[in-house]
Length: 302
Image 1 (tube, helix red, strand yellow):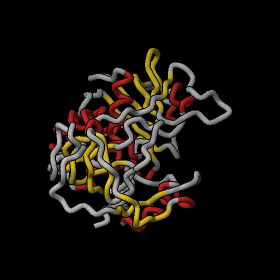
Image 2 (tube, rainbow, N blue to C red; image 1 turned 90 degrees about the vertical axis):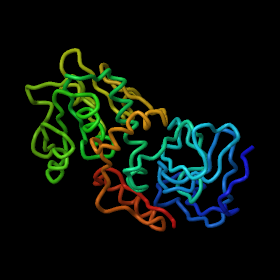
Image 3 (cartoon, one colour; image 1 turned 30 degrees about the horizontal axis):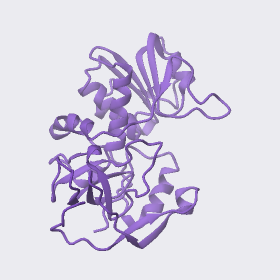
Image 4 (cartoon, one colour; image 1 turned 30 degrees about the vertical axis):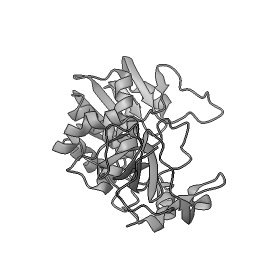
């Protein structure tokens, strides 16, 4: 059992909930009277900035929690395995979270900046790790201005030591790519990247262009994608491409903390946000336009 908390915790929670499948715009409802989740032995209760990810303050800890205490500022992706979503998510004032998916928030980041990071930066990092990416290799990032793509660029350049980073985006987002460390910003509305004579050791596909990505890869290279293949195509991409499902780990955030503290790797938040908690449905509606830059963030209730 969790020890009594020194924080005043209400019995009920303000949360966005759904009881049927459908788009977020159609099924999300605001419930001001949802019970605050019970805290298991390996969990902490966090008063949170909402979203798929969380950033907030620990207000209660389970009896087996070792790494966090009340008052700690933490962040993380609460769904350890994306194929098994939690019953209690993060679009709420309070949420109970396993300590293994959390890390202490970098002091240099605000809660809004921190909450934009976990899912995107962990996905970017795990994809690069799975390709065996290392210093001196080249990479092409498809969808470089998106939440994951913007972090693939920064990690490849500033953490892994890429020899060359190329990335695609629309015309208005090319300067953003360059500011993140892209050596070759490609306007996908004007150029076909697969037709270039220069090829890449790794192509990281965040937009669902596997067949074209393979044509941009060096012989012996790899293509990693985070976009499932559309039916009736095979569920898995054709070799040598591969897809993976993220396993959320607070240890990855801890490993990247020095780069975030120093500013070498930066959050990228869409300029239309952050959206207030009461406008969560509007935030999802904006996401559905596929025009967002970086991450769309919903900011705290209070």
